[in-house]
Length: 247
Image 1 (tube, rainbow, N blue to C red):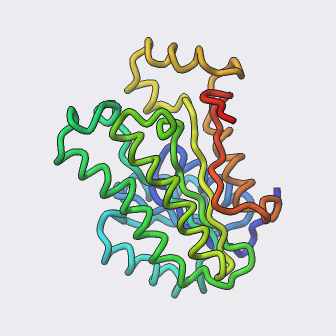
Image 2: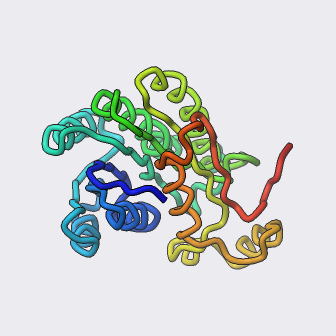
């Protein structure tokens, strides 16, 4: 993979899980990484563990004014933004049910973070990414957006739509926008939240007969922010072990 020395990467939901792993991988390749997260204490611990190229930022992606100010501050301190990874999102067992069952209040909260958060971060960062060589945005969708039978799945379907819309909108500014749809990736959170029968049912649909790992998603992200994917934009890369193959 290409070297990212001198690049500035903003990762929302950067305190743990995919976000922290993304930060570790990009910093290891020389990028300055900003781990933006609602949990500022955990983000600070993650940044300290990653090293001098990482910094923590307290941020609620659902708050438009805070997002705008954060992107402006990052760009002012570091000279611009090269990579934005819209990883922040609400994912819970509660979200794995229909909207009518989940209820309007909780569904609205999930949409505010999973959908509007992506839009707000993209709009706020784009002016500081425009015209920068290799500028790339990666949104985190989900394989739950393909059968799309749950509240969470609907929000992640919206993320796929946002990806194609912004690919058209930001392409003339030299910014590529792609997404990743992870399948069943066995993080600590997934192990804690999903009942064993659900894990077994999803695993049985995989063609690749092993557990999905965080490293699988990290490698997909590194590809999408590298020159190797320079002819790709508006795409959603499914990393699922072959679940829900479609023609």
